[in-house]
Image 1 (cartoon, helix red, strand yellow):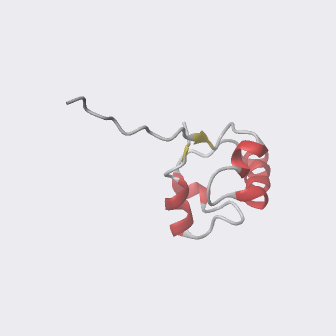
Image 2: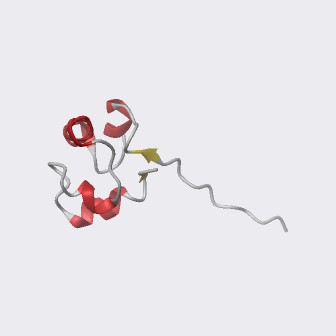
Image 3: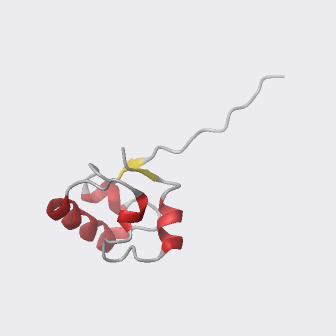
Length: 74
């Protein structure tokens, strides 16, 4: 029998994604996406997931953990 591989979701890079791409990530939406873009402009790219909690709207640790399933920082 052939082995069926589960497809991995395409991860959105939070450090270079557009507003539209960020807003489409489950758990982010447009308002958080705008805050993330502003944070990137002022502080540069995120270097770790804990830093995402410094972005307005991402203070909740559970939200940050949820977003990790759909995004990456590299």
